[in-house]
Length: 499
Length: 97
Image (cartoon, rainbow over all chains, first blue to last red; front, top):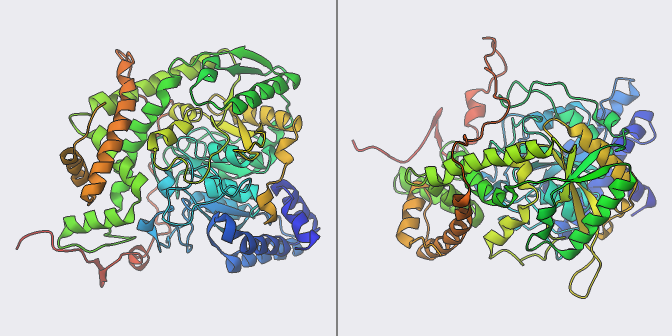
């Protein structure tokens, strides 16, 4: 590969948009550089479910023509990006990582794809994911499992594993993921990239295939904090097509990146550091990150989240209940897979049995159980009440601090196949991320260091999570950028970017 | 350790419209029991007088102006149906004559 192409792939989204606007490189050259690398790396990485050379190059040409004609360009003009396959794209197959939707070509455009196109971003393709966004490793898939660009025998995290792996490998300049219980932040952590789950309602859910509607939220996965600020500003804001999208102005997130974190109060829930299963290297990296935040001018204080240890159980009752209801629509009648049966009921049962993978079935069954008349109050109703307590815990904590810091994932990553037979152990890897979903809060994962290479484990990325009050994404960008500027590990490029 | 029998799993599978093999019924039974044991943690929480969660901002009324806007044609809407007859979706018989 020529140096030129490798150089183009090392540019951030903001740098690319600047170069395209100034005429220093063409959108076509950029799209071509990325598409060539995708061809080369995909046999080993499996981050993409499909890529779209023809439409990407024609979108890029349209940007170049607009620039040549002196037309105004959007904030992401010419930036090659890719979408998790949960995002509906008109005319482009969208499967949500499931056999049940294989071959489905949506007749409409989701808000995310529409707003990114409007901003000039070039869609390279659709990214792999755990089926219906259910999973933390990308192994819940009927397709090839995505590999971690830092160690190809390791998982990239999930469910937005393709989105995080593609950014880490520089096979797109940025991507979008979705986060129901940590599905943007945990893979961002495992792949050494920046991922933000916005406040619930900050970004539209129109054209984002539903898993658990009261928790689902879309957000960017990027190379750095400033890119995340720019992309979030493009996709955020009220959407009349989603009644839960908030009708509040979108602040200048990029300006917030320059604010620094002097005087910011960083809360730490110390009791969580005694958690069983917290890797000692993750803990050590987190303590180092706290020191760095203090060096940047932040002050530290202890906060209590008394229901922290109940969050995972609460989440798995609520998200499975919502999933069992949302996924009832896949019945083989109007779209997607149909497996014939002697009567309508057999057709439903056969279609869903063959269309869904084991984890999706497990969650539908659990959701069906907790919503049954006999168990509703003991499970679903109770979990909804505990959710109130979790949200109140955060409210009380934010009276004492501006942002709560924690590790993103309790472990740096794990090998492909290591946890597939233990669903509960997999669920517990969401322990630090789930609270923000239950309380509807914004949270960001940043590169927070690396584990040391040993004879049992390669050098792997570790994530730092920051969580802020509702609609306080600006605080995340201010603190996140300040921390990022004081560290070097975010600039390390994964070996998978040179496959 | 709680147990979920194959018969109970069969009932859930039927409610969820999932055809499962005997092996799957047994495996899901064991896994569901383990997950339900973990979820039993919630029974320890005092939730007396705690309301069910509601997001801080409830969606407002989303009434739109009654204008004609872009629509899907019936061809577009039916394009993905697995089996069609003209402008109808074909399904197996579900009602006795």
